[in-house]
Image (cartoon, rainbow, N blue to C red; front, side):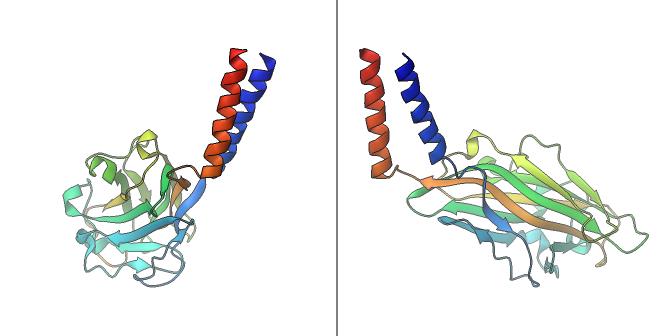
Length: 229
């Protein structure tokens, strides 16, 4: 019995080792370069991603600054959120052929800026293509709200934990951050801001590599054989 438990423990440890990549930053948009065309992500190998802007924000002189992504209030719909206005940024993720991904968290930093003495705020809501963008991501009280800040680093960060629905994905899915703001603020001196948009998880071969599958098969056979003695 003790020997069987040793074998079972070894198998468990091996499986844990195979999942060592859990918690890796698969996709990161740090927005470190100026200009709306510079939303190039930092990616883990075997992962692809794209960043697009909803049609509701079309025409806005928005884009990454040297530190974050900004959206002028002139083009942001007023609170409460109306998804039909298409005021969002969209982040897609998918594995390359032959791989699968499991997503465990969706992180981003959010803030709002305005001229001195102006009480402006922006709201942010997360949704996913998994539900057809028909409902908010679970586990968070949406919308997140941020008032205009007094310094360049005065932002808040959220980590949205993702469940089994986001496990073993082989097709592209996307996440959207919808933006709304305080009514009566439609100028170019008030901005909703985003930074460090990240998807956390692991990427693995869709089919176990032959060597790995062989080792697991041998261990399983050995375990069963010893149980029968």
